[in-house]
Length: 282
Image 1: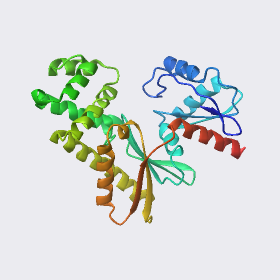
Image 2 (image 1 turned 45 degrees about the vertical axis):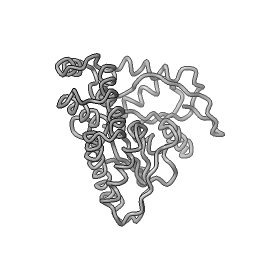
Image 3 (image 1 turned 135 degrees about the vertical axis):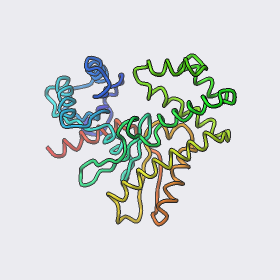
Image 4 (image 1 turned 90 degrees about the horizontal axis):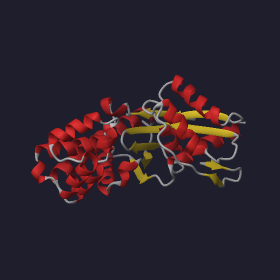
């Protein structure tokens, strides 16, 4: 997304992933070029990348951006910075839950985060963990699975037997992303009152709520109120996810005035706002 000085959108582009950890470099570069094709020359650019975890990652990302816009001043941030900066003004904490999960804030101009760490080491309450719960429950009682869940399994694995599903899952380049797609049918099962789905939502939202609680203890220990914005695809699947998460927060922060709502603007808008800040500094 590109904005002119008056704030009008003058370009929007789209392409495939640009994850600094998992996207092959050639494809990553190609996707960045495709997303910015026909974009007017820019003065300030901020790219917010998944997989940006170290200073060397940041340097590499900025090198990619500079190769496309050599005359611009470029800067790279982690993807969660874009989600936070796209949140409603006054947001204290942004809780991101998609394939993975992460909790972040911006304090004195610096991004701070809790959780994350990827599906192997963390990502509490993420769509991946819901999908994993859904698949494990299916393996326990395949004959009792809902038509919605069976349809999703056929769509993503073209199979319903455990052996074939497991074999195909482990051969996939991004198994966590495929499992995350089962969060939506799990939400549908929860709406129908299926016990295992409801238990999964309660368990995983409790885990995510505790990441927020730890984050609050670390960065907002003296606060009496918190404005929390929910970003990421998980929150679009079913209201049950948001309700369970909010309930767990209220139970654990009984004296805190909590305001919880979903993000309205797309995260890429936050990246543009960060680029705009660069213009003000200059």
